[in-house]
Image (cartoon, rainbow, N blue to C red; front, side):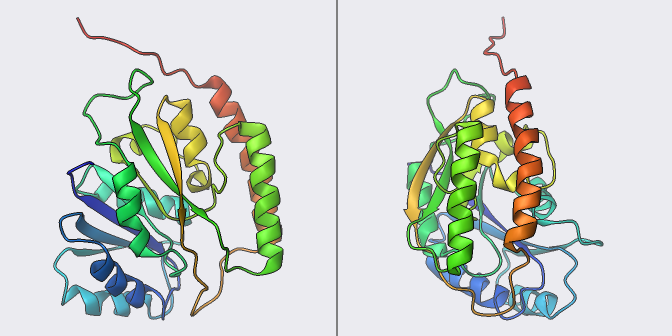
Length: 248
């Protein structure tokens, strides 16, 4: 098992009624010997998201609040939090409360410890652990769309990930920062990690219904963006070269 603490990064956009509950649950569910900090990246919310977070900062000194000055999307929010993170292992969750923070400890036990300077396939260590939602709580149409999208993505990318859209993942911070960044990168992390020689593992996790607010995506915009990005990621994978090397 790794011994380093983690930075938990949670993007949030208009998650009033969800984000405060999720923060408190995360501090309760994740052992303090594992959890180093929680970073909430507010993607320019216009509801009460900020106040829920600021109130909890009075209680938790390792709760950090970053706010975008413009609405920039989930991938940009993740990257902002990861750049700011203090610890070498990143845990990510969605801000809507559908991911269960109790799963983080199990994912943590499946991740290998990051080694400074180890970037390519000369290591057999697992650098990313992704959750797989075995009992989805979304609507039937979203479940069907998600299954179809996963099959198409795996047919094109051959990444072996059964649920790339699951928001809960743990991975090496340095590995993420070496990836080429683009909007929607959060949907393709397993494929991109593999392109750079990193190994991935997938474990079952809990999925919960949204208790407040509304989803920021629908099946139509997911499909359009996903198809466009899929060909881009396929091109990136074919053009990526990550040679092993030694220093003499």
